[in-house]
Length: 250
Ligand code: 3Y8
Ligand code: NAP
Image 1 (cartoon, helix red, strand yellow):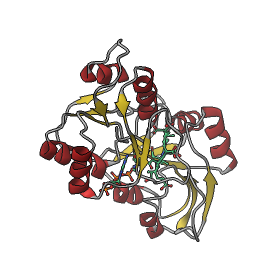
Image 2 (image 1 turned 135 degrees about the vertical axis):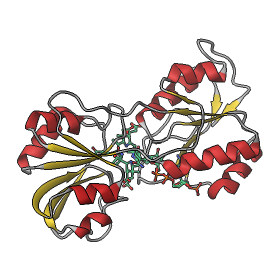
Image 3 (image 1 turned 45 degrees about the vertical axis):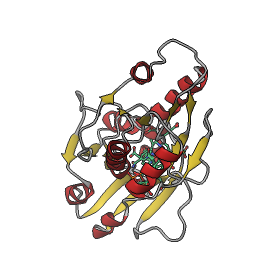
């Protein structure tokens, strides 16, 4: 299984409890990823060809893509590699967030759209989008940026007026309200990740009347998608049964 999300961790627990032979795969984006109750591998496969080879060598019978909705390259590679290797693929994905009453959202298509949507200067922006897509915001150096990163940044931040908090989710509403209040945040930039692990900042923004610039998910190729761990277990043929895993799910 391709992991790295809350849902992936829940699925890993369910597979381990049922004795399903499976391997949990991390990209290696963070220094100390959360331990899983399954054998783990860390690092890229080496593109589609590398994943095809890995699937064949490991004689995997199923692949579960439980990566993040913005891990678009991994998901695209999984579709191509599973088709080439003839291994069935299912994606476990949480629904996108929808704005509710009291929300002040501006939806944009991508990171460039998020930069364009911000004031040219004087805003105090909570960039809760990790560290991989920070550079584009240097186009608007006149704003203050509060970054939230999983690991301490190596070297200087790419933004002149910025501060980083080092924290790994899941986050709480009271924690995010306090964080945004103490920094006088006027805008939140978020990826439409869905799920509960990153939702706190949206509730906090609603309570504080702060504008949210919401980045829509990237388009992904057609594949079977389910929203619940139970549906993955049914697909694997393990719903409710504990069997000595003769099959290997990834
Ligand atoms: C390496 C594994 C679990 C999974 C927990 C979820 C919840 C907490 C919220 C904010 C938003 C952000 C970021 C975020 C969240 C969960 C989940 C989720 C967002 C870990 C993890 C890995 C990563 C990679 C990391 C990215 C970054 C994105 C931070 C582990 C903790 C912003 C996404 O420093 C970096 O390079 C970080 C890179 C990809 C996005 C980016 O572009 O920078 N996730 N996050 C996985 C791997 O190596 O394969 O270290 O334990 C997992 C989790 N992060 O099991 O409890 O399920 O979404 N992750 C976003 O949503 O915008 C933080 O701050 O409010
Ligand atoms: P990405 O841009 O879609 O993928 C880039 C490359 O990283 C892939 O082509 C693959 O390398 C490798 N990779 C990605 N996920 C992998 C995995 N689970 N196991 C093995 N290799 C993986 O990926 P990303 O957005 O950087 O996300 C990386 C990880 O962080 C994923 O596990 C994802 O679930 C997690 N995550 C991402 C976000 C986010 O906002 N993007 C949020 C929360 C968690 P090769 O081509 O060499 O195989």
